[in-house]
Image (cartoon, rainbow, N blue to C red; front, side, top):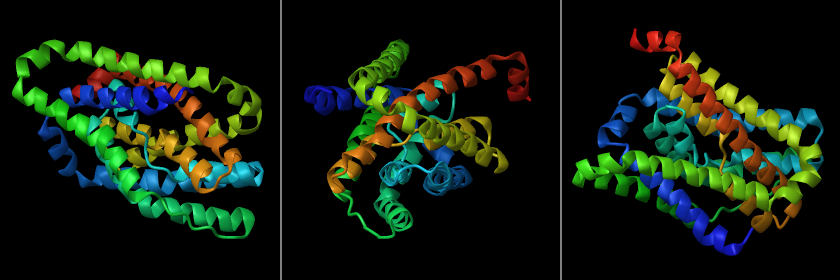
Length: 295
């Protein structure tokens, strides 16, 4: 993929997506999230514990080659992806919860990623290799791509409520269009990698994605969380920060083969995310679901 797209256009598009989400949020949304700490705790349990455990089981049982298995574990150790907030919003979930979980798991990743990767190295190779994450770079990246744009959007809504209200739907449509373009550009730039390795890592990536999304929803349901929170936790578990996974594999381990799991998962997770949006919106619009929500 062209460096200008990766370094400028992609972060800019992600930042605008988060800005558009901020236009739809008020401080009360986040106050409501922290008034229900159980939702945050369940989300953290799903993302930090359940996702790596399921990835380990799938990698071990599928008999993946060591390099691919380690790549899958690196991906599973990563925090939630930036786009999970938009997916949650489009699926009519609790956007503030998704954004909160992305921020928290990105900070927790400073400890959880090295731990998961080290345990995986010990299991699959018999030798540990504690990795040192670029802490400042990780936290700064998440802060600039999520917290700042969301805060700016919320500030604009507070300062200019009427103009923002008139343009809110247009901003939302543009954010959605940008997300679709990001998905298309990613597929176009990685089609050779996809065609060469989809047979080996594709089924495992699909199995992981579907299992963590189903597991996240089941975990939230078992905890008695409301539907909007279940949607947020499902998307947070299903969408990983694949860019961080690629960075760890390529830069910290200097092992291009380990990046395959993150690259292919990044492509496939967007397909399942779009399907999840349509499923949740369809269920939310059904007469039976409207009756349940009104009860």
